[in-house]
Image (cartoon, rainbow, N blue to C red; front, side):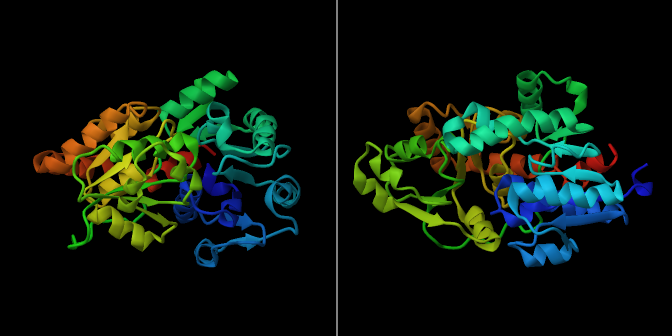
Length: 346
């Protein structure tokens, strides 16, 4: 029983910029520390988020950082306590065997051009060893479970699904009289498919509607073969804080998520939590996450993306229908339930 065991959470994700993987780590760690008094959160010393570290009462250990910390400092600390190690963000120490691992997806295999050569090489060596030496494996969707089981030839009973959820800071805020816009949130990685979204946006008929893109801007967007006057109607907002993102979700006409590949995909359900209709790719895990609450598009079909955006802009009844279904869909996901699944496996 986990209440009688010493448990350590690997919080190296607090040294990384927050994307979906880090969000999962933060929220699950918050829930796990509520479930047992025997949990210690540890990380390297170069923490980026002191407020989160304080909330989790993180213990800074070792002298190295990054993967070196994870493979040397962390296991040296663990050997002394013989604790069960919970890894929430894809990686962990290979040669510490009393551990469980969360592998969110195998994006580095399916879309290798998203990553550097060194990253791909390291992960291709590291991940099989971690899967082999972990007591149990967690992942964030049935889609990712199939991917991991098939690619690494792992029995499905060794893999448990623990869904992402929506953080408490995402909720509907009053609609303002701001510009009319559709919203997209993501990195500029090729599998996120922003190029096709921009091409689709360039052919919609409503010229008074803008496209807001949250995330790092890429100069590659300027090379897209469209009328470049379109870029006057596209706002690249860069990285924003959670309150700004909440307001952007809440005031958008709709949220568009045209990704080719997602292990889960948190932004669409964040948008739903803020009372916004969602247009989503029909690829990878997204139909599993959205069920009938998303308006689906073929991410490879620019005309289909444009048509669905056009329809949703004009059809207020459909907007309301998707918003209502979205509120119900979000209820399927819970950080607490996912944390309970993890700790009950120990």
